[in-house]
Image (cartoon, rainbow, N blue to C red; front, side, top):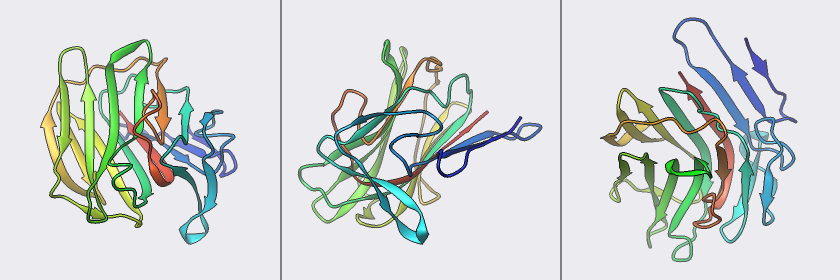
Length: 212
C-alpha cells in the first residue's frame, strides 16, 4: 500500500516489500495541514519561502507551535525521526528548545523529544530524550556544536535497544534503553513541548518518520 500527498497537503507515505521501513514525510508548508492532519496552531507561526524554492514554517521562540493529533511511530519497534531545520540565534532567551515531542497526554511516562541547546558563541548542540515507565535516557554532548542560522538535519534513531542521535548524517551520541511503544492515541508537537514551553526559534522545513 502506498500513499502520497501533494505539496499542498504536505505529506508522503511509502511502503515497500520485505523489511523496508515505512516512510512518512511531513512537508511544513502550510498551517492548515501537517502530514494530512489539521493541526492546532499556537501563537502565530508563519509559512515562509526557504532555500531552493521550498517553503518552511518559522517559529518565534516565544509562543509559536503546532500540535498534530497523530502518533506517526505508533506500533513501531524500530524508528527514525529526522527534522530539517534552521535554528536562529536566540541566546540567552532560548537556551533550551524542545521542538519535536511525541506523547499520549494521558501517559506522561512514555515520551520522546528532540531538542537543542544554545551557547553564547552562536552555536547549538543536539539533545535527545526518551522516557518509559522503567527508564529514561538523555543523550547530549555540548562539545558537538553547530552554527546557528544554517540549515541542518537532526535525527533520533531507535534500533535494537540503542537510542542514537545524528546531526547532518553523523552519529554524535548513543545509549541503551528499552523502548515501550507510545499509544496510537498520542500526539506530536512541533516547535515546542506539548505543554507549551521550551519554544523553538527558527525554521522547520520537514519532519521525516521511518518505522518498522
